[in-house]
Image (cartoon, rainbow, N blue to C red; front, side, top):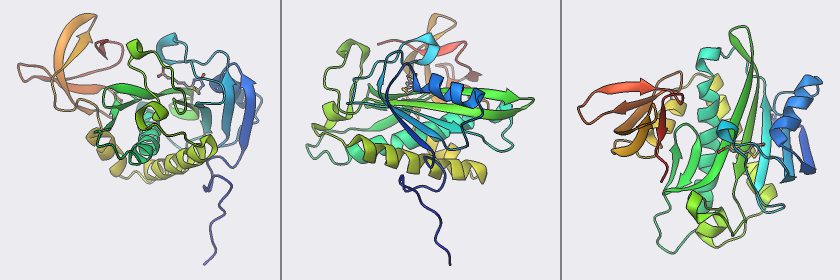
Amino acid sequence: MMKPDVGAMGTRVIGHVFIPLDSVDSTNKYAADLIAQGKAPHGTVIMAHEQTAGRGQRGRTWRSTKGLDLATSVVLRPTGLGADRQFILAQAAALAVHDVVSDVMRTVVDGRDGQVRIKWPNDVLVERRKVAGILIQNELSGSKVATSIVGIGINVNSSELDADLNATSLRMETGLEQDLASLLAHLCQRLEHWLGLMEAQRPELGLRYTALLWSRNRFTDMELDGAPFSARPMDVDPSGRLLVEDPSGQVQAFGLDRLRFAAR
Ligand code: BTN
């Protein structure tokens, strides 16, 4: 049997085109520019040692430390993915980041819990502390996703993060320094794994995402339409809305436009 063509990332597709940059405003923006120029095949990975204007969710800025943290964007061209199912890309990305973070956490031997969970829609937390964020920018063509930019920031070797923001890094959690190149390769492998299950329409992806939902089945402080709301996350629906149960037992689905976790 022929061996699959495995590249430097240990993957077949994700990262076969690899663009390392010393400094850039935002890898997501760089990816969008490449797509506009028709120069970004499926699986292109862009990584920057420094981002001068990293983008976060809800128009926020994403800060990382030059040479210490991972800032990367992956260009995907999913085949036949309906716009109504685009949330599955966020799930695949969150699972890939989860896997990388939890593998590192397994090296901790000091008895701390170190539970890694996905906070809806796609923050990755160690216990209550945010270690990674994901910003996905999709372009539609009719009712299908034409291109997706999966932007991933992982706090890796930083050691001075804002405790008020409940941020952490792999180094702060484990005391160990990580090799960014190996981490990126592992991330590409896990992303390829989950995207494969997505393409095969296998149920494992959704089930695993649900199982790893932060605060699942636990009442937690949220905000619904700006007002305090206590509810327990149960699951997500195919469009990515969070299914929550309120104290009266009523289960409803809400999108990010209405529901968010209360700031701590
Ligand atoms: C969040 O707010 O949690 C999402 C943060 C996403 C940050 C990453 S870093 C690489 C990529 N390029 C960007 O400008 N943003 C994403």
